[in-house]
Length: 167
Image (tube, rainbow, N blue to C red):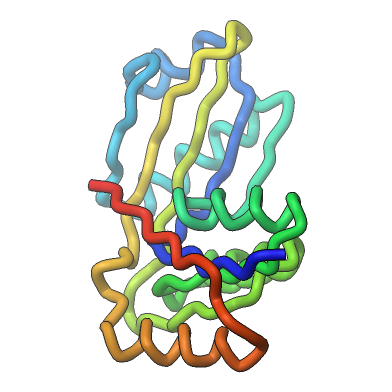
């Protein structure tokens, strides 16, 4: 099977199924994405969603990571490369890579948190997002990327390097 290295910004994704009233009670627009710069406000929103959610699921994510997870499920030898923050979410992300059988080529960034996305799903299936940006792929230095790619090639050739470009 092909060997793929996916490179991009890691996010810790949480999906919560919430009642229709939750979005308006929290002042969030329906079907849109709302940025949060204050980590405490974001944590309060996550706790409020967890309290009313009929189901709550969290996993490693972000465009490149989600692509890598699908490829791994299809049997590809797959790795993820990106900069992880120094918070506990970064550790959860690493554990998630292991659960999906992805090789961990992440780089630890100091004094920055890993990004998080909260997907709020109402009963009609509408998705609304709240997110807190964290360390991004632009913090991945070229030398770190080269080192990660060199490490990945020790087990054989790489067939594809996938880069997510998300702005």
